[in-house]
Image (tube, rainbow, N blue to C red; front, top):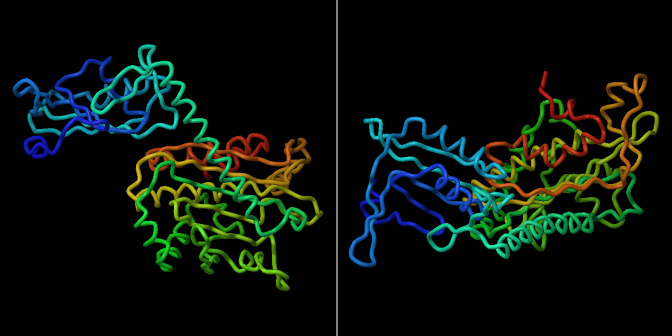
Length: 388
């Protein structure tokens, strides 16, 4: 209320107000915010003063059932459905204001009433075919960023392919809009904050996967890199040395790099491993554990940077052709049915997610990263099902 009276609140590319709104208008406004994010407030009138200027005036409305109404519109009147957060500010007499927050959507633009919508400086409009094409091209470019980052992570591996005995796991997370550079620098220069950040992800995965080696708490060595800083364990440090010291273990490598851009890059040297019979297995459980930790870490960074836009996340495991999951050996399924194996040598997946999705549905983010791998190996229930 005070913001309205003082003039601090005004309509913009990111804010729209209405005294009342029909379902069709609500759907159009929400869809228009999906590209860059924004806020829609119902219960505020725009009053003209003179021929040009305008001022905003509170016009509280009956708020009962409004949260359900907005939820139904966002799910059923917009294609694809658009996740939003609706909050009601009540005044005590059954009236109040409805505040709808729309995070940037990785699926933007969104359609309602057979039209796609976007925003100008302070209002919504139906997008032209050329604008829709441009936004779809932007989505493809975002997907390509994730692929390029995974390529860079793999090419930066200190072990050449000819030197490896195991497949390696690579994970990346990168903000698709600039973050607060000053906060990034402060984080990179604070060793205690870095260690606390890393250890905070130790148990942010399923209990049966939390202790699968290598685990984050042993990555205590800090190394500054050209574009960031790495927290690594001793084997990751030794992997960069020539010759490598006696006792070096490729399967123990864990290197977590925080980048000046605000992103994260991980290298894990145990994407595959050998059992007692010398048969190689895919450590899909380890990939799931670090996908869960990466999701947690990315959400933590979003909060620290005050970043509310989109991220690209990616996961890659190489040298997996013909291999089955380590879970099939644990469960001894082989006597009942032939275990599923990988048909290609590399599993690679990139996704674009909103900060809102990281916060509200981390399980969905993880499933988007590893779900296809687990389906191919037949281990979805073991890794993503309910914990018994």
